[in-house]
Length: 410
Ligand SMILES: [Fe+2]
Image (cartoon, rainbow, N blue to C red; front, side, top):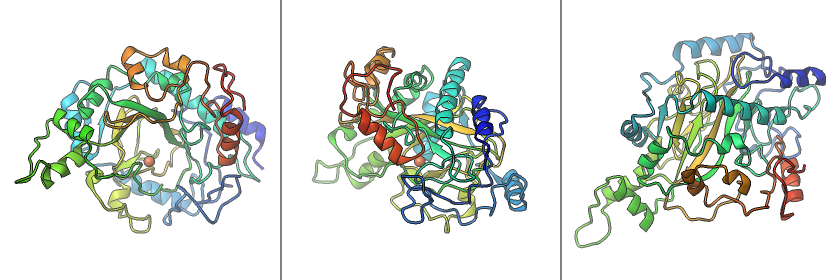
């Protein structure tokens, strides 16, 4: 079995950028998913949709891995991917509306990149220190593919806003103007924060999916946002209602949720860059299954986005994680924002004392998710790959009222 002490030693020095010995566990079968208790699952697989074309072994220099690596080296990445500077606010919003995402460099300065790397490494250590079953090095997250974790779902509160490192990213001088341009207002809101990561040796593709479905409803508030971002409202003859073309523009260009994922390392052809399908945020059809996904979609990735950059994603756009065949952890922590027209009913996952540290605009953004003073959000502070453990922790802490920051129990 994997020496527990070796795993722990590895974790002590773990960083979410640069070379590492973390990952590449040959004893974790390809496409294996585990259930809520950690048993290999054959039934409900959740996000662990198998990649039927994956290499047969999780071994760095296995011939099938080498073959996939050579293919990615030649072909991986969107041709001519546009990368904006943070001050290109209108251009970034224009590309975002056209493509369903936009990459912007230097969203994080050196200090903020260092802070977010520290927070990401700390959270990942907590996830990986749980001893693996049998000879496996790590516990796979319930309902996901091996070597892939989500900071959000691995947290027993389902969010990371109790961590100062995540909270420090909600209102940045580089991101706020672009978000305000996209939402046409300063009254958008933070819904949560988390992100995803893959260890070296995550050789399977994650299936293409959307994070948020489209309701196709045009509420008063959404119509207001449409006017704010310059959509001309035309009405059908003899009616006060917007005509079909206008309604389509409103739905296409006024997303309910926008997420920024921040790159902790340069995204390369080899280390599992996220893939985004251009224009798919406006499509009413479902993404193809892994069996039916064409190779051009598998290669439609954000290769070239440097560390400190971020991708603003319309959460309706088709996207998915890709193989990390390198020796570097690929971590993309995120912050999730809601449109100004969304309601105020959201889970209170940000402790009040964290909220108090924010800028005035940051406080405004987090108005719907801040907990009452003295109330620690249930589950906050417990990171675990298994659903059953997270639920137990949240239940233990739920409704218990006051808890001090730094002593979240569990
Ligand atoms: Fe996703």
